Length: 120
Figure 1 (cartoon, rainbow, N blue to C red):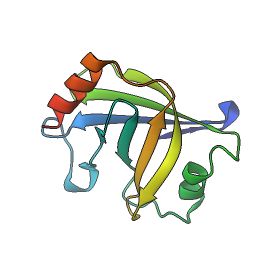
Figure 2 (tube, rainbow, N blue to C red):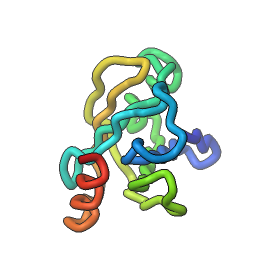
Figure 3 (tube, helix red, strand yellow):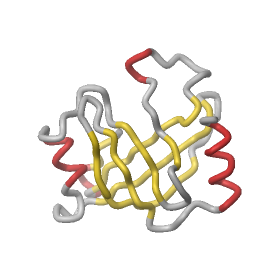
Figure 4 (cartoon, rainbow, N blue to C red):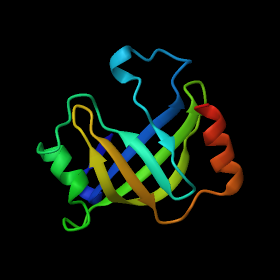
């Protein structure tokens, strides 16, 4: 996560397949595509819903902030896919927050299939 204050955006980059790479138990977040236009993403393990970061995620539209999603299938991938802007739908829990984001532009069928295979 990167708070690009000057651009009024949060950049959220995540790896889908956490079986490779050096992911500790506290960073094996459950990030995956629910459908072509919905993404399940987990915040950092210390983020509470009522924290400044949690409130920024939940209220990004009212704050006129953008949420920009980037994903890669594996840790050894050199590049991330830019999934585009997303809007907050809902969240469950905290520490981490399990957030559902709706993509402005749905994933292509091929990319959705690749993402589904990465977490299968």
